[in-house]
Length: 396
View 1 (cartoon, rainbow, N blue to C red):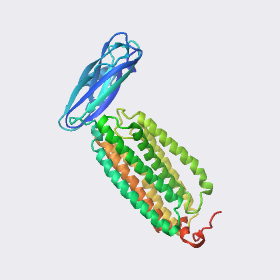
View 2 (cartoon, helix red, strand yellow):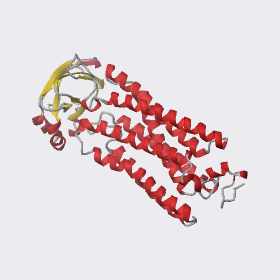
View 3 (cartoon, one colour):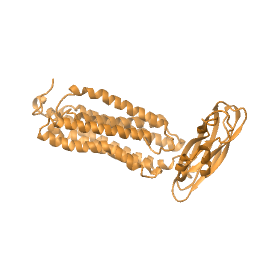
View 4 (tube, rainbow, N blue to C red):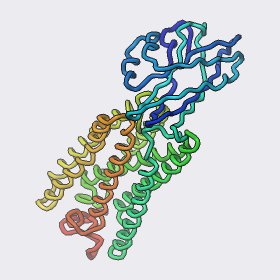
C-alpha cells in the first residue's frame, strides 16, 4: 500500500539482495492494482546500503531519502498496466553487501492509498540469482544429501540386524525411522528448490515449504520421543497407558510448528530475514524449545522417583544429553545472530543439520545396541522368554 493521507504509507520496503564482490544488477517494474490511476505518474525507487539500514528504519518515513545511495524513477501507467523495466548497477570492492530497495511517495502524487504490485529481479555479476547469503548453500545441501543417504543405509542395516534377533522393531525405533525419513525428504526437497532457484530466482515454492514442514516434524518427533521416554515409556511402562494423554499435546505442538512454517514463509523476503525462522518465528521456536526442555526435565525427575539405582544412572546421562538437544536450537539461534547477514543461512544450515544427525546417531545407538538404555528398558524383553524384562511386570 502506497500513498494517501497516512504517513506510514509514504514509504514502503520492496526487497533486498546480497551482492558478492563485483558489480551486480537489478531491475524492477510496477503496476497499480487498485485503485487504478487516471494518468501516469513517476515515483522513485531508492536503494540503501546495509551499513545504513538501521538508521533508515529509525528515521521518519520522508526523511529516509537522505540515506539512499542511488535511485531511479518508475513511471506508473494509468489503468493498471505494467510500467517499463527500470534497472541499475551496484558495485562492492571490499566485501559482500546487502542492498535494500524501497519505493516512496512523499510528493503525495497518489491521492488515495494505492495497492501496488511489483516484480524485482537481481543478479550477481556472473548472472546468478543467488543472493550472497544463499551462495554455497546448494553445495552444502548436496553434502547433506550424501550424509543422509549413508546414514539411512547404516540405520537400515542396524534395523535388519535388530529384527533378526528380536523379530520386530519397537515403536520407538519406528518413530526414529520416520524422523530420519522425513529429514531425508526435507533435504531432497530443499536441493530441488535451490537448483531451480539458481535458474529462475524463486525456485519451487511448494517444495521449499514441504522441506521446512518435514524439518519441523522431525523436531516434533525427536522432542516427543525424548519426553515420552523421560515420562517412563519403555522404562517403567511397556505400553503408553496413561501416557496416551501426551499424544494430543504432541499433535498440537506439531500443528503449531506447521503454522509457524506458513507464517515464516509469508515473511520470506522481510528486511530482517536472512535464514529460515529468523525474527519473530525464531523467538517463538526458542520459547517452545525452552518449555519442552522444562517438561522434559520435570518428567525425568518424576520417573527418577520410581527408579532403581541402575535406572537412575541411565536417567542422569539421558537427562544431560536430552537437555543438550533442547538447548541446542536456542544456543544456535543466538550464535547465528552474531554473524554477518550473508553468513547466517550457512551457519544455521550446517549447525542444525549437524545437531539433528548427532541426535539420530545417539538414538540409533541407544535403541539398536545393547547399551545402558537396552538393559533398563522394555526393548530387552524382546530377547527374554515370555517377553518380560526382569523387574517389570508386562502390562496387559
